[in-house]
Length: 240
Ligand SMILES: [Fe+2]
Ligand SMILES: [Fe+2]
Image (cartoon, rainbow, N blue to C red; front, side, top):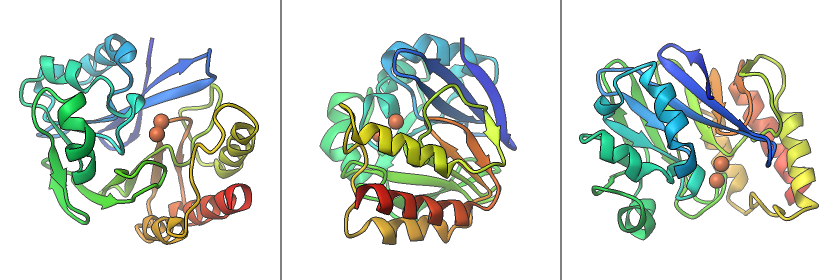
């Protein structure tokens, strides 16, 4: 059973905790004239995520399916979604589309977004930022909803465990704990730290998000600019 929480106006977080890996997987459904789902979850999660989405909208009316990079928890169930929502188009970076998505996981060709491009879904405006290797993967990008100041931040701010849906408290220390824990096990080097990491994170901080919505763990509501700068420092401390 997935849990549903409204984290910003019309932005619903769908959370499923998988105890074997001690991780929550979050998808975000944005209710608008053209409904958008951010992250599909893995194929195995499709039935429970579909059931949750059906409590919010008619799933067949889904128009856009976004994600940061090509990976099972980001877009593994894209084809399953596109088979029930016949007008649903994937939105991702050009690299994602060309290198993997169209060939491996899409029922129909994806729409590649350019860096800085804004996708209007009705009331809401999603700005796309190309962020190679942040959080990880060559094709990575981020979507930022400009009206509510919501940053859909994928694996950035990843927190392990069964945590609260939404918080005003610091989530960077939990993120740092996860990084340290992962460095000692099979998930070592989960996130790279490159010569471009600080600059890319600075660009995300400049958006001054009010809500930060990670794929794994609690959503943070507060001073997003400071939180991202703190996260950059945590990554530098552990990974650089
Ligand atoms: Fe990832
Ligand atoms: Fe992830």
